[in-house]
Amino acid sequence: INHTLGLSVNLGYQRFKAKGIDNFAAISTDPGSVTGVGADDAFGVGVHVGWIGQFSDVFTMGFSYQTKTHFGKFEKYRGLFADDGALDAPANFGVGIAFNVTPEFTLALDVKRILYSDVLAISNPISLWNGQPFIDGGAGNLGDENGPGFGWDNSTVIKVGLSYDYSDTLTLRAGYNHNQQPIPDSEAL
Image (cartoon, rainbow, N blue to C red; front, side, top):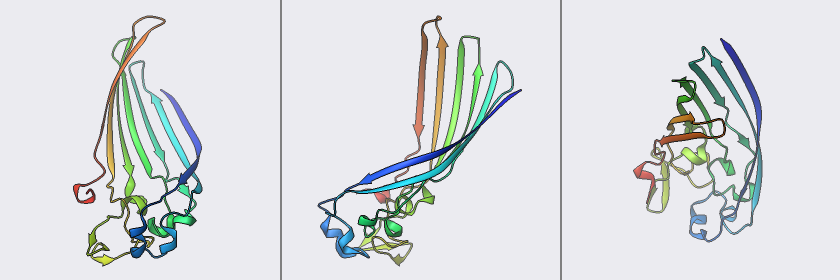
């Protein structure tokens, strides 16, 4: 058995700008920090760890976990995004296996889970009633910790891949990726 362990630091950069959504200022904790305030930047950091085990010439298995990438808050848009302008990248984890069916032909399967529920600006539902947002039965305005977000659910991604070494100079590959829809019908207009 051959094992490989990897660890990396993820550095992130986000840039956001909104204009023309003035009507939402009326339901914000900070009406002056919703729209038309120019571009805002945020830097983030997270960790990614992975393991691969080659158990034989035929079978390989791997696992990975990426923490939430914690970004600084969008100060100029603290009245728009839930939790005073926080918009982190969600954590995810996955497992994969590969079978070398023949020395030339490999079949691989990966399953990955994306944890959108850990990021309030992405997971908080946006349910509007008479112009006022209501989150889990309680009122929450834009910018509040319990304020509206995009309403996304956690998502599972399944990937299947094929690789065929046709010759020393040509490798043919094909794949299929199925992603569970993270946006429920109740969160779309």
